[in-house]
Length: 124
Image (cartoon, rainbow, N blue to C red; front, side, top):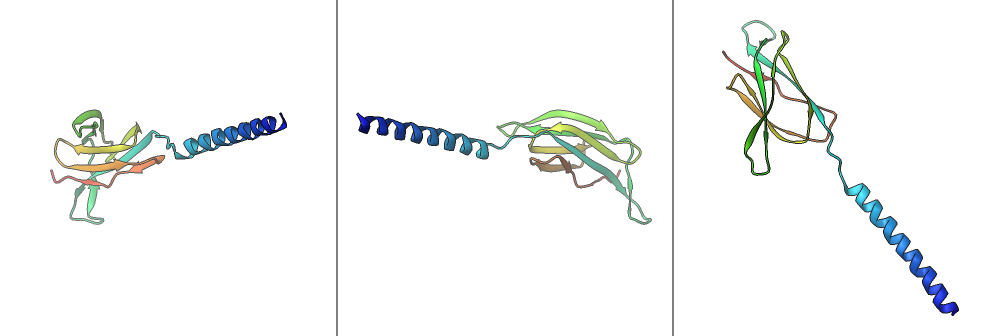
């Protein structure tokens, strides 16, 4: 009888340890997907320093890709006088930023609070 009681206690302890260990592993291995704020600038080359100027009122489109790598429209933004554009609450993954249906930049957004896109140069 004592042997069975000790065995049951050890069995319950082992089960409890296994459950706690499993929950800890799941907690540490699961990576949450945070919404990211994207920002970038559209600029044009100039002959005077610093060699570029902001491109105001450019139409910037954010294109996403599904699991089959097919593009789909997500959002558009018209740049301000400073040439800056912003897209809020974008989830991590691959995207394409297109300016005026021409130049584009492919980006891969990770789990960060914000993401700065490289400046996009346009020549028209």
